[in-house]
Image (cartoon, rainbow, N blue to C red):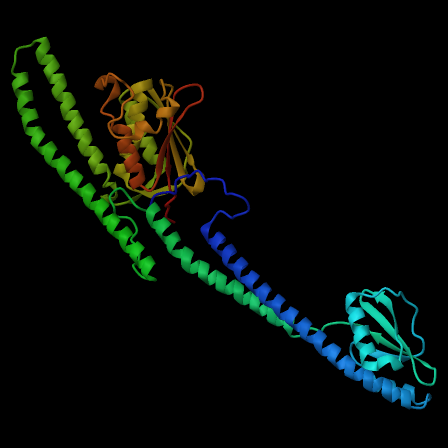
Length: 447
C-alpha cells in the first residue's frame, strides 16, 4: 500500500553490486567457476604428465627398433618403411635434415639423452633446435653404411577431443542455472518481506506473508505476521483508550462550561471559557489522530481529483479565505475521499493560519502518481525541524501558545492519513520564503 520511500543508498565498496541477489549470484558463480577451472587445470596437467610419460616410453622403444630395422635394410628399401615408424610426435627422415641451433630446451635435452641411452655408443648423436613455436628439434645420427638418418621430434600433448568444448559449455550453463536457482531461493523471500514491510499500514492490516518454504523462511514470515498483528492490536488499544478518555472528559468539560457560562461576565469567566475550549479542542484532535491510524477502514471510491480539489478550494473561497488552485491531474483516482479531504484541509489550514493564504497545485508526479502541493509565503520552518514537526504534539513555539502553535497534531494526522492512503507527505522550504507541503499519491486509476 505505502509508496516506497526514497532511501539514501550507502556507497558500495569496490566492485560489489548493490543488490543482495547480484552479490550472491556473483559469489556462487565465481566460486563454482573457480573450482571448475581448478579441476580442469588439474585434469590437463595430469593429462600432460601422462602423455609426456607415454611419449618418452614409446619413443625409447620405437627408436631402438626403428634404427635397428633401418640399419639392416638395403638403402633403396628404407624409404618404404619410414611410414611404418611415423608417430604423432616424431618421425624419421633419410638425410641430414634441416640446419638449426645447437641450443636445446630442458625437455629436448632429456629426450636426446633418453634416445642416446637407448641406441648406445654405436650411434653418436647430434641434436639441433629447428623451431621454437612450436618446439621442433632434430636428432642426427649415421647408420652403419655411412648414410645419415634424422629423427624429427615435435613434443606435444594429446589433442583435445572435439566434444570437450561442448561439455565445458554445458557445465558452465549448468553452473549458471544452479547459481540462479540458489540465488532465487535465497532472494525471493527477502523481496516478499520487503514488499510486505512497505505495505505495512499504521493500522497493521498490510500484506500478510505465506508461512511456507524452508524452516527459516517460514519462521521469519510467521514472526512478521505476528508483529503485524501486535501493531494492529496496540493501535486498536490506543484508540480505545483515547476514546474512553474522550468520553469521560466530555461530560465534566460540558458541566464546567455550563457552570462557567452561568457566571457573571468577568475577565476570569472569559479566560475559563477559552481554557475549556482549548481542552475540548485538544481532546478532539487526540481522537482524530488516533482514528487517523485506521484511515484504511474507509472504503475507497473513484473520484475526479481535479473536481475534488476545485470543490475544496471553492469552500475556502466562499468563506473569504485566500486559497487558489492551479494545475490539472486529468485523471480519476481511486482513494478514500474523507481521509484525502482531511489531509488537504489540514495542510491548507496550516498555510492559511501562518501565511494568510495558500496556493494549491496539482500535477502528475513521479512513479506515475499524483502530486498535490500546498504552498505559502509564511515564516516557514527551519530545515533542521522539517522532520520533527511531523511528530505528534511537536510545536515550534517555545511558549506552547495554542493561539499560534495549535495542538501539534495537524501535520502528524496528515502524515498518518497520507500513509494510510498509500502515499507520502513531505515538507520543504519554498524558494523566496515560506513552506511547501508535498503530498504524493499512487496512481490507482480505473479504466
